[in-house]
Amino acid sequence: MYPEHQEQSAAEGDLSPVELAVNFAQESSASSVRAPSQEVIALKFGGTSLLGAERMRHAAGLVREAARQSAVAVVVSAMKGVTDQLLGIARLLEQGERQIARNEAQSVINLHLATLRDLQLPEHQHDRLRSEIKSLGRDLLHEVSEHVRVVVDAALHDRLASFGERLSARLFAAALSNVGVAAVPVASSDFVLTCDNFRDAKPQLERTCRRGRDVLLPLLESGNVPVVTGFIGATQDGRITTLGRNSSDFSAAIIAYVVDAQELVLWTDVDGIYTANPKEAAEARLLHEMSYEEARALAEAGAKVLHPGVLPLASQSAMTVWVRNTFRPHLRGTRIGPAHSGGVA
Image (cartoon, rainbow, N blue to C red; front, top):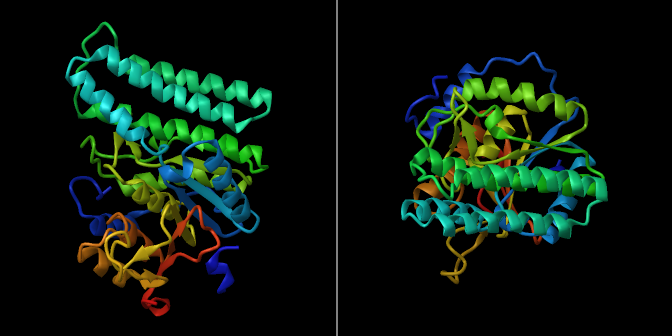
């Protein structure tokens, strides 16, 4: 049970996260798709939480626990290190090292095939997913041509970077199915509409909300867990974009807002938010309870709290945000909510 339960298009251009959130709240029109009949929780898993089959199985257990009492939407990062490896391929292409770049691309494919093998899925499910991973692998290798000089631009960086989340979403959906949770991988590029500022694209939030509800709400209402790729969007004409490095938390906040989630749980590899970096400051203290304003002030003071787009979206809907440790789920973590229930503990 989650701690909370234990306690009872103006967005185009270079708008700030606060302006994006305000526009989102003001302009989002109601969808004709029926909302889930039960409360919704959004869970986001970072790359460390998904590194390998054992960690995926562990994270799947956390989703299964949540799904016993709520409709659940999941947002996933790429497995730890994969995005860096994919962006390294772009640098190799810039340097003309095409064969080394292809070797790196094949290494990414092999990593996910090895994780699939270690998941020990039923044969029919394994074979289907292996075919999907190989198909994505061919797409990746197509971007890394051995014989044709590739134009390395910001758009290519985003296309390459997108493969990490696209692969991890498929694997994690399979891990969920294997523990009895009906799950469907969903490409966020199908509904997160952005400008064409590649590598740091801004979402057009009104249209993203409308399109996202059409995609996600039927899945939730039918009892499926959508496993959505974080970090990725697409332009109006379908070109892949990314919302910038370390933006999966922002993606998760967008998805949580789209599905009217009461809670967003950011599962990571730390126990919560600290007053300072605990690795550098012995006096660092874990904050168990914060208001949106306190979290924002801590971030403005230089602390690495959350992506700046998370809190404005959360505060618009009074959504509770949790920062919790995937590997120590018995710990409460940090709760961020409205001021009346906040207060630094």
